[in-house]
Length: 119
Image (tube, rainbow, N blue to C red; front, side):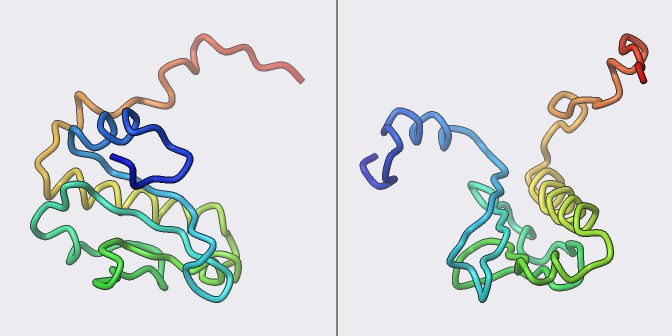
């Protein structure tokens, strides 16, 4: 408590009271910033898990995976590059921590039969 600016202590206590996989963008992480992903608590094997895309790496100094902004911006398909990073770092946490993925993960297509296509 008391260590995260602009974030109530109760948020940090609740957020870190269970295992988690977190990701975001860090403006200070490299020439033009970097995307990051970490697990808390970090399970054994997490740092050694292979992640995508090329350019992503585990930073021992920061205790998290980093993907420089340039590595995303310079690809032919930045959306896919970033999604691959987010998915593979989440999988690193879920696999090495032994999470019940079926109970945790949502099926993004579950409502497709209910949606109406207009156009």
